[in-house]
Image 1 (cartoon, rainbow, N blue to C red):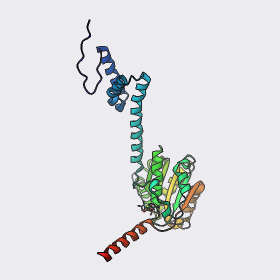
Image 2: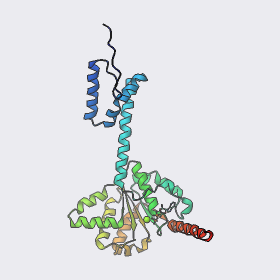
Image 3: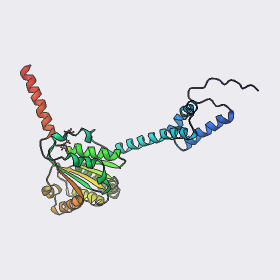
Image 4: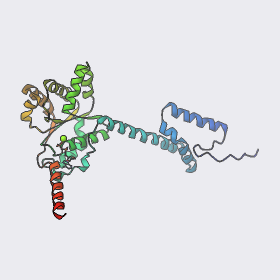
Length: 278
Ligand code: ADP
Ligand code: MG
C-alpha cells in the first residue's frame, strides 16, 4: 500500500500521521484543559512542531511545554501579589539616590533588600521630616518583598484607622484584624500626619500587637517617638505599641534636606534663570 500524501498542516496543529495519533493529540489537549494548563495547551502545537523539527527527546519536549506553563504561572502570581500590595507609587530601591539622603545607610538598605528581616519578623521604623524618601524606601522594600514571593500590603495610618472604624460599625472587626495580620510585610505609612482618635490608636495597637514576633511591619513617621503619646492620644498605648514595634527592629532616622523641596528649589532656579534670560 502506498502512503497517501497528507494535506499541508494547518498553522496551529502538527500533522497527525494517523487517526490514532490525532485522537491522542486531542486527548492531550483535553488533559491540559482539565488541569487548567491554559498556556501549555495554547503552545502545545508549537512545541510538538519544535519537537519534530529539532528531534527533541520526550523529556526535552515535556520540559519545554511545562516551562511555558511555569513561566506564565510565576508571572501571574507576581502580578497578583503586586495588585494586592496596593503600592501607591512606582518607586524602587534601585532609583533611590543615597547621595541625596542623610541618615540612610546604603549597606543597611542592601541588607533589607535581601528580605532576610522578613524571616525573623523584624520591623522597620523610618523617622524623618516630610520629603526625605520614607515612602519611597518603604514602597521600594514592599515591591522587593512582593517580587520575592511574600504577601505584602501597603497602607497609611489614616486609611488603616478609617477602615477599622468602618469595620467596627459594620460588625467586621475580627475579619479586618485578620486581614491586617495576613501579609508577611505590612507597611503603615504616614503615622503622625493626622492625629488618631482613640479608636484609631487602639486599632493600630491591635494590628501591631497581633503581628509582633510573627510578621514584619514597616512604619514611617514624621514624629519622633517621644511625641507618639500625642500622636496616639495616650501615652500608655504609645508605650505599649513602641514596646512591640521596637522589640526586634531596625530604625532608620532619616534627616537631611527634603528631596521634594530640593527638586522645587532646582525648578525655581531654572525658572528664575529662564526669566532673567527671557
Ligand atoms: P516622605 O515619605 O519622606 O515624605 P517621599 O518618599 O514621598 O518622602 O519622597 C518625596 C519624593 O522625592 C518622592 O517622589 C521620592 O521618590 C523622591 N525622593 C525622596 N528622596 C529621594 C532620594 N534619596 N532619591 C530619589 N528620590 C527621592
Ligand atoms: Mg511619605
